[in-house]
Length: 196
Image (cartoon, rainbow, N blue to C red; front, side):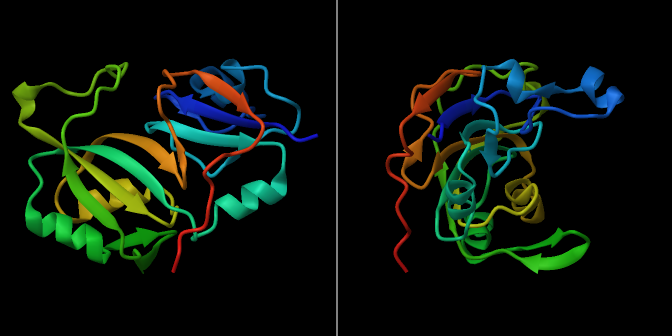
């Protein structure tokens, strides 16, 4: 029997369970500190150390491979440095040029819009304060998952990401999960293919 989990990954944690490097053990925090996961649990996709939010985990490699594909939407809320312009939002929707593994890459078209600041718990450590200039929040929906893709996209249009929270994978939402909370589920309800 396979196990499936929904996790609100906190800032500062790596999307892995262990490391064999002694220096990393002292320097980083790992998912295994948050919950007693079943043996063989793996994260479906990753969030970098500085990113927060929804992380799906499973012991079923087939489910993991299926969900990481391009047919499922991933939605993020991003707090940006500065007040984003209509032109920058349109660039994000059309796709922007970023670098992936040292090579030029143009992201697929997606969705991007301004949103009101969401009611997330304050991040620890906190994001910089208003004395350093205004910020704005956007929702951005992509179907890819390149390394640090959303951060690279917003930087490419002139509005670097200060805080990044994944709120949805397909039809699975972060919902009311608090930072560091884990919920075991029978299956990932709402994971349906995006219609072409």
